[in-house]
Length: 200
Image 1 (cartoon, rainbow, N blue to C red):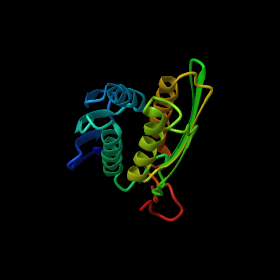
Image 2: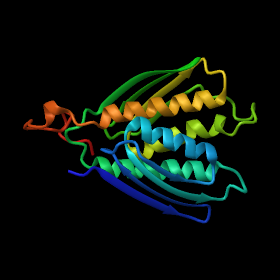
Image 3: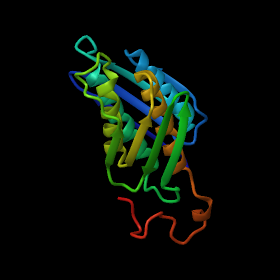
């Protein structure tokens, strides 16, 4: 069974298209007008071991916010489509990921309910780097549209780059754990990883 999903969004602010294959090999084909976003999505594909195609355009002459937000929105919707009913998956993922001085902790539940808790949350007005604000918003938007619960904390990062990159890697690896097929459910009478019988 193919676990692929695609989604698009076109507004006066952005034009986004995403295609994802959850059972890929980490291949990334990314084109956005934001270099750091390209970097993060490439890392995401590699560490989640998905094949990911992203085409994004947006009003970056205003700022990066709309393009980052809508890319997360469309990526989340593509993930939700690729997961289908979510039968037979492990559902939960939990990662501790070191990146130099930073330590990222991420726990994920693909149980169908949207929630996100991202820390730290620096005051976006206290620094000049837009990703202080954009990174938590990216995760929150992705979690909402993918119908996932995400708890993400990055400790001791000495730079915004390390904070965001460590977070992106840990999120990708936790999601990879969560959406991998559970071999013990493959032949089960009830393959849904929930006592309710549904994750919808």
